[in-house]
Image (tube, rainbow, N blue to C red):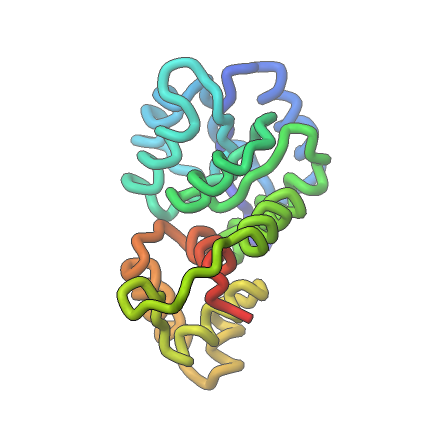
Amino acid sequence: MQLIRVGIADDHKIFRKGIILSLRQYTNISFVLEAENGEDLLSQLKSNQPDLVLLDLRMPGKDGIETTKEISKLYPHIKILIITMFEDERYVSHLMENGANGYLLKNAEPAEIKKAIMEAYVRGYYLNNFVNRILLKKSTSRIKNAPSLNNEIVMSDREKEVVRLICREYTAAEIAEKLSISPRTVESIKDRLMERFGLKNTAGLVFFAVKNELID
């Protein structure tokens, strides 16, 4: 399996070292960057760009929210996993819609962190039970307004099918095979939808689709 190069930004050195040590057993994950805050991370990314970063929210200087937005703008190929103690749905929604590929709590087991890294790297997003509960809550509590041609979110049947399969964790190649189209066409549809709805990445598209009940 391909080696995944990972960076971590957290102002608590003991926590950073603990994460690195706890994931050392997984030989396909290599930590190549450590940063104390967002400014430090962005500075290091100029010369050393990992495949994925684990990013704390509350840090001195540039916090995780600002840093997520800057990374998604400057280095859209880098996956971002938020790892924090904040169990607040407002952070989840905001971050997933602005470039984060997943949201983990700091009490997560090493096996879940490893799973999150793998899924974010391969599929572009990771949704754990915590995030899924937030999505379900948003979906069931959403106010049902009368239909309006001005605010309806319109997608073609093909676009809906692609989003549905993305939400079911199929890769672009798997979706292409199922729909008898090319992987490039799948990526083109996905990119078009993200541009249309102002989304940063696949994670944002999944979050947007579930929140707005665009799939069955």
